[in-house]
Image 1 (cartoon, rainbow over the protein chains, first blue to last red):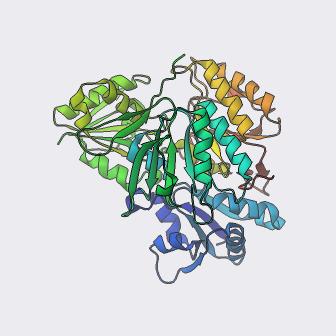
Image 2 (cartoon, helix red, strand yellow):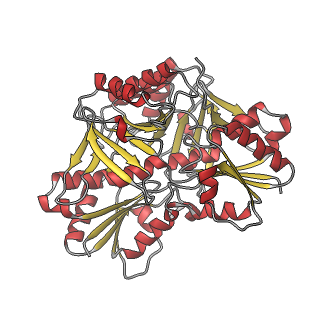
Image 3 (cartoon, rainbow over the protein chains, first blue to last red):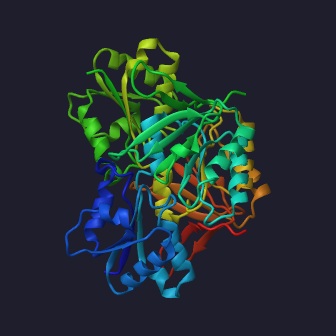
Length: 250
Length: 250
């Protein structure tokens, strides 16, 4: 059976992985993905694992298509949802650029709970209004495009969720992004750094735009920037909640 | 046990509902939500169901808080993810505006696969780049805010996902929204109308901005407007795939 599943494994907590993802994995003869995601999958030893480094998405996608050509049933795995800065787009890009017969491949994308949804749920309801989801990485797009998008998103009043906010190779971008946002938004808008939500090493920092410190952020962190309609509810004990009002005043 | 779970039930296909959602439901003594979502939940007869009409979110949230005060364990249910135009924001708004002691309520938001993620997976990988998610309803925000946000989102190059695109009470808004977008985007950008994805009455229409016909859309439809980087892959059989390139040219 020549078939490819592109599977969103969810944020990391097995209870947040869908039965559909599990069923699809159970059909696989081969699992392809970034090493830590391939490691996360519990499968019989007969299944061939093809872990790879980060940032080789197109190679990985072509490899999956070649294996499927050979009659293998391939699971390409991503954390969260594969359609949100995961492997789904890379697979279709490989098909688009590849030989004509790859278009006949049987591809099923299995959606998952994305990191942004898991982080938002942990925090309260920060996505209660209109929002946008951006990757802060300038590996695949020019940095001035990132800054322009941030400015327009802030002007639009969107809550902003940032994937890939900071890495060893990209240490300064988040600081500059926050500076861009400070020009358009009040310093009091809530900011959350939600790291590894649903996993044992989860860490949540609630702050505001004025005080947001990029040094508290790593590649496993989802950064949420509130809008002017995002409110904080302090509680007698436990983390405060953030929510964004559904209503926009005239 | 005085406790509230706000649960995203997923898009409708039970295989896309997380085990965490099921576990939370199994603890509930009471289920609150919009009628069709309460109906979707399979629970023992001892559980009290409180179905309500659409557009009474705050009343529903206050009811949940009052029941929790009485020691009930309440599940508030939403389709998709409760944080994305679901009940989560309404609950926190009710707490924020309510008596101080409501802030001590034990609230757990259980994330789910949102409609936008399920629709995107069905279509290919249209959310492969930066994207925004908006409600097109002008019940809770002025229509000129909606139009302004659409214009800025198009200028930013976001793929745009629209919830609540059209209803009997709001028949003209989607047509006007498409006209706003036509001023900023080429008529060739792909548009998808993804109705009830994952449910038996699923229907998918792939078109482009020039030809997008609002009459094909109802309240159960998720509208996706591509960016200039969204591509269509025709296939020898079956629906075409849409994907958005991860790379933005300089």
